[in-house]
Length: 231
Image 1 (cartoon, rainbow, N blue to C red):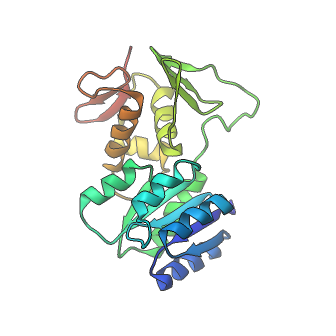
Image 2: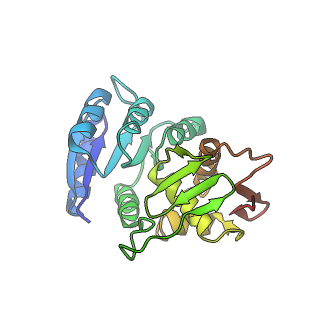
């Protein structure tokens, strides 16, 4: 698809190189170079993907991502020059879908964006066919509307969080390995740290009010991965 991609990096030469590669893929690209400009551009342009540097002037990437999530469900790829794992986890905690550590291959970044945009939206196949809500006790997953409720209350999930929950709930009680989850949610050509799955599972559990010590919904299968548990 020809997507709108917003590239945000205070290193203007880097932003322009990334933009040129994305444009070769047929995407419409806009570049901005600080945090406030990123939020303003995202509100005005409504991009499909934001490539977001963590270390930005004005507002850092964490705050930009936090603000983005108040009005957009675009995909966010976080870029960081810091190797500290905490930064990566914090970035994902505010709704980033993926991350890359600088220096990175521009081709790899383009491949990540391509994989995101190819991800099937749950319920998109067979337009007009409504699937009954999947229920797990007080948890209700409406795949057609892409809505999740717990005890009747709407739970706001990012695209990736919803896709992850939809993949697990499609085959309840099946134990999914991390690679199986990545293939289902991020795509078969995704390459990176498979523990990305664990981070997203942790955030999803918190949003659902699911205690990992006594889970109602998502259970850890030791040595394998995760499955949707019985109520």
